[in-house]
Length: 254
Ligand SMILES: Nc1nc2c(ncn2[C@@H]2O[C@H](COP(=O)(O)OP(=O)(O)O)[C@@H](O)[C@H]2O)c(=O)[nH]1
Ligand SMILES: [Mg+2]
Image (cartoon, rainbow, N blue to C red; front, side, top):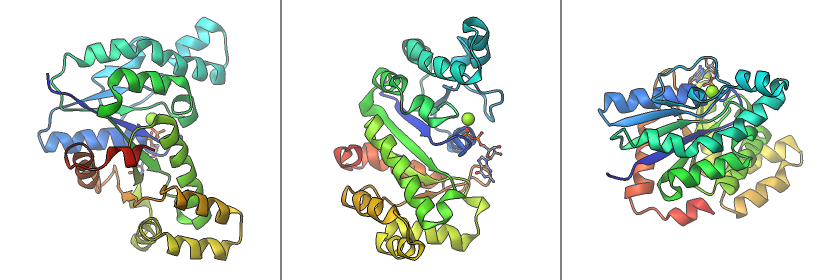
């Protein structure tokens, strides 16, 4: 069977991962591109899409609270760690689908998955060379230069941690006025403009800025909205470019 491309949707709590998963799946449906959707969030109560494979088939965060007699925080950590034990089963279920793409919605809180061993185990099981991340930037925090810098910092930790190429996406862009979206995209394309904004704010993010710029971590962000569907085509094209366009994968991976 042809190799599937695995698209991990990553970002901080509430940044729009589950909605993006649904919107990107709708986009692929319209283009009649075969794909499967995986929910890796054992704590999800509601999902704005219908998953083909769902980690909640095996356990949920509330099951864990009962079974181990722990509170909600402990249960979130245990259940996120347990995802790794099901990685093989998930891949096995996916083998039943002749999908070209697999979209993977990750647990609500980023630190529960991305910063823990589960993510490493899952990505290795799915195949590192066939995996890409879509990293969602929170639109409200990204509006100010220092906020945008802290978003890049989070994005960078995810890049270092997961070691797969990751596309930075400005999530929920419909929530921001167009000129603000343009300003944020402008910062990401021309870091000098971002630096001017940082100087006006006079805080410590200047040092962080230099470090991340040197490391090549300030990359053009793609604005997208899961409500209007804007930006989905751009994300799709970048994924194509990464896997079929001869883009230097190593340079995106660090
Ligand atoms: N305006 C707008 N709201 C969104 C968008 N995507 C998600 N949301 C809202 O943001 C909230 C959190 O989104 P969700 O996908 O559940 O975040 P997650 O925790 O990262 O999975 C939801 O209640 C959505 O209503 C978007 O593109 N535009
Ligand atoms: Mg979610």
